[in-house]
Image (cartoon, rainbow, N blue to C red):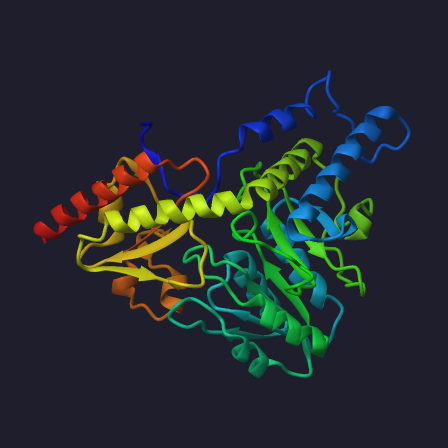
Amino acid sequence: MKKPVYLDYAATTPVDPAVADEMIKYLTPDGFFGNPASRSHGFGWQAEAAVESARSQVARLIHADPREIVWTSGATESDNLAIKGAVAGRDNSHLITSTIEHKAVVDTCKWLEAQGVEVTWLKPGRDGRILPEQVFEALKPETVLVSLMLVNNELGSVTDTAAIGAELRSRGVLFHVDAAQAAGKLPIDVTAMPVDLLSLSGHKVYGPKGVGALYVRRSPDVRINAQIHGGGHERGMRSGTLPTHQIAGMGKAFAIAESSLESEIGYLESLRASFLEGLSGLSGVTLNGSKMFRVPGIINLSFEGVDAESLMLGLRDLAVSSGSACASASVESSYVLRGIGLSDEVAHRALRFSIGRYTTAEEITFASAQIVDVVTRLRAVR
């Protein structure tokens, strides 16, 4: 078994070999390396065809029209484009989001607050979920946009976007969903949800880093102001020469995710059960997040009497995440864990274990045994 064992799939995924094979076709002199915006020769036409094929592949995974997919550099840009683009040029705008969103949303909304936009920050329950009633109670006549993530990146908790979206649609309020952690992990249907704007990432779905997409609903047409100007690419919403190789890779990755979604969910559920069973003999272990409304691949646990940094040092053969941000001489506990009501002390004891397509049953058995051993030893020397 290869060590260290990678259990940080929520941070990034390895590129699927089939995706890497697809990408190489658009890089070298004997491939389709042209600029997809070059309409005067075959090199450009071939690249454009690859871009449009990938657009269809991404659209299929979320049940969208390919014309509703706008290419970006990743989910961070997609979040910025959706949120800033929705409020640009409007006076007295009001946004609704939550305190446990990804930093790409949190920092964007804080920046807008500094520009005079009013933002309501919803607080989740202990299970890491925002209830529809919280959103509806926060609505105002000036509310332009609600931005909530579908799957929380630290907890794996799933938001009831269908109930929220249906009510917002009836009130004419735009709904943006960050689905970076959701694509390929659960079924997504933008029409059934329903949403107006939805952010996607390539590297969370076994595709390349540096590419993402924003779903922008066409019927009726959702208007957002571009944040990057120069050339009017992507229906005027996002200028810049398209990276054909990355886009083709993301398209291939999403096509694989679509074909293997059901089996992959079942596989991850079995690995999750084995992992938690392997820890069942260890006392003082708490699951952070929702036990019922969650994806199988993200497991956030707090270990009584053991801080996360010491535990990670002891788990040298496992690649995991603490969810803590190191800033200068201090270590700050996760704002997501504090956001669901955990004390700093309990939040400092939490680790995120995230499993994926290439995690094996042998690795899960090894990982759970290692955790039991290291936690037991650390508790003994307290």
